[in-house]
Amino acid sequence: MKKILVFFPLLVIGLSACLEVNDVVNPGDKPVIEAYLAPGHTVSMKVFTEIPYTTEDSAYSEPISGLKIKITGSDGNSFYLTETETGVYESTQKLGVAGTTYAMSFEHNGRTIAAETILPGKPEGYSMDVTEIYRVARDFSSFTPGQGPPQGGFQQEQFSSINLTWNNPENLYHFIAAQLLDENATQIVTRPSSDSNFPQRPPRRFNNQPIQTESATVNGQSFEYFGRYAIILYKLNADYAALYENQNTTSQNISTPVSTITNGLGIFTGINADTLLLTVKRQQ
Image (cartoon, rainbow, N blue to C red):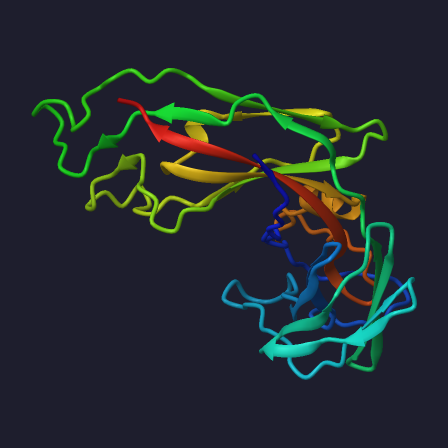
């Protein structure tokens, strides 16, 4: 069964200061924006402070409150975002169709912060070669080396892979994410509660890096829970891929983070998605 489902990816942005000639913007003065715009959805935008590389390691980013952010569409519609919580701004209006261009602007520290993006079309021809896979449940919660096998034994698990394909004649960027849908899903591997080397609750979502191909393969052993997953294919604008590749900016690798935002940093970009469903079942 095929469904359309959009989850906005969470992106951790490596923040650093800019050393710019003929620019009086001080380190830490540029706001950082995070917004992903999808056709038919409302806008949600986060705005927070930059962490310049000149500060101590204990410095952290803070949300920026009290902004008046305007969104203007090429379809003639414009509206302002409402601050729903500190540093988070949202719209009540939904965005238009794919192909619409949206501009964002607001004033901060005496400068106009602005950006523009286009809503990409939906991924085409998205398909998956399986709709279910099987994994072996293993319980290591009370396992002690040398005292016999854990619950479930050392049963061999057959390797499985999920092959995804789509049409991409223009060599555009795409991004695969797997999102667990069941709230009370059971973990496939139960780890010892005393073992600090392993998180007790594995992540409910994982993804790959942006690619420009027409296919991708997901390893079945990447799934940490039994249950239903949304396997989401995002179509991306090039600015998202550029920022993704630049995430590793650190104090040891000082460079200006890639951004298309005037007088700001971060991401303001359009995305679109299609979703297929996969069920991870218990192997008997």
